[in-house]
Amino acid sequence: MLYSSSTSISVLLSEALKNKIGSALENLAAKSQQQITLLTPEVAPSSSGTYPINLAFISRDVTGQSTKNDLKEPLLRFYDILRNSPDLKWVHAHSAGADRPIYPELMAKGVKVTTSSGANADAVAHTALGAILALGRQFKSLFESQQKRQWTPVLNNPHVHSFKNKKVMIIGWGPIGQELSKCLRAMDMDVLVVTRSPSKYQDTLSHIEMIGFEDLKSHVSDMDYLVLACPLTDQTRSLIDANIFSIMKTDSYLINVSRGEVVDQLALIEALQTKKIFGAFLDVFQVEPLDPNSVLWDLPNVIISPHTAGHFSGHNSAVEQIFIHNFEKYIHGQPMMNQVSF
Image (cartoon, rainbow, N blue to C red):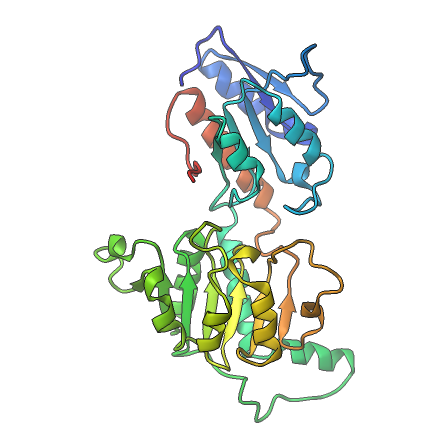
C-alpha cells in the first residue's frame, strides 16, 4: 500500500524510541510527502475505546523483563493498544522470531508482522561457538575449581578434547546457522546442516553437507555436538525428544540457542541425569524465566544462560535500522524484509 499525501500514518513507539528514531521516520515520510504522527503508550483511546494506530514497533524496552509466559508492563499496555486498533496494518518485533501468541493473533486480523531476524545473528552464533568451546574444554569445572581456590588440571580427562574433525549438526540454516557453520569449518570441524529444503542449496553450497528433517534421526547418532538454531514452528516443536536423546552419543552435547519448546525439557532432564548425553548449554527454556526450583540449575553437566545469547552492545541499534528500513519500504508499498508467514 502506498500512502497518499493526504493520509496521516500513526506509529506507536515507546517514548525512548520516539526520541531516538522519530526524526528519521519523520524525514522519510516528508521525502515522500506523507504525514506521520508518532504516538506513545500514553495515547488516549477514543470514546469507543479504540486507538488510531496504523504501525507499531515493539522494541526491547517495551518487552523489558516480560517473557512469553510472564507478561509485564509496558508490554501489556502495548498489547492492549494493538488489540484495540482497528486500522492497525503492520507490527515490527525486536526479536528474531515471532512465536509469541500476540503475533498470530494479529496476523489473523490481516496485520503484517516483521521481525528483526539477522540483527543479532552473529552474536547468537558466536555464543553457540563459545558454548562448544566451553563444553569441549570443560570450562565449568575450571570455574568451579577457581571458586574453591583449587589447582585442578584437567589431565587425563577423556571429555576434554580438541575440535578438529569433531562432528556438529546444526538444525536451522538462517543467518545464525550460516555464521556458526563458517566459524566451525574454520576450526576444521565437520558440519552437517538440517534444513527444510536442502536441495535448494545443492548448487550454491555444495561444500556444505545438508539433509532434510526426515533424515535427522539417521545422522544424529554420529554427532559430537547438536546445535539448535531453528525457529519454533509446528515442525520443530518438541523436535528433540526422548527418542533423539536415546540415539545420541553418550559423550555428545546439546546447545540450544533457538527456542525452549524445540526440546522436550523433561526428556532433556532425564537424558542429562542418566548420562544419555554428556552435557548441554541452554539459553532458552519451555517456560521462562526458568523456575528457581528446576533441577537444571544444579546439574553439573549443564551451563545455564538466561535467554541472552543474542544481546550485545549494538543490538538495539541494529534492530532499529531494520525497522527504519522496513518503514521506508512500507510507505512506498514495497516488500519488507523478515515478513512472517505461518
